[in-house]
Image (tube, rainbow, N blue to C red; front, side):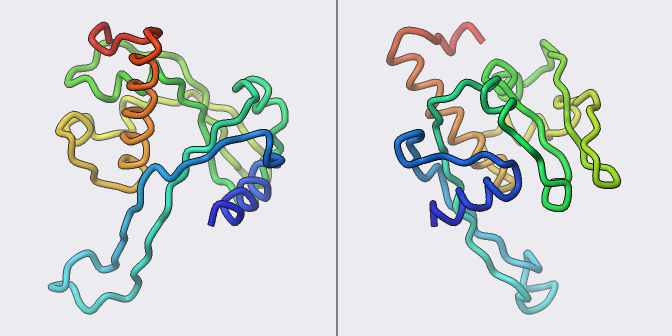
Length: 160
């Protein structure tokens, strides 16, 4: 499965890694059924999504410089640094950081401001219950990131 995910990453972003350039682990699995309730009818689709955390030896800037987005495959993307992720876990808006979102419009990538605090349901994020696979994977990634930083005495979650 990881090979398939890395192949998709390459097709969509142009990023390609040799086996010595990354480490990877499964963050979480997300089951998705449509319709979401039997009251809406028999399931028409049922999938299991595997979310990976792939750590590259490259910096974010190095990765961005290597990216060549395929506008046929990618509608938009945004780089979200850990300090911005921390804002999603706070019950009240405290900080807003300028981020750029890159959107595919008519085959070209266009840069726009990204209003991340409007994108996510803050109550759902701070309640501890995942409401989507993306949210579940980001929560797992952030848990892993914060515990690694705390264990290395680099990051103190209580200061966020």
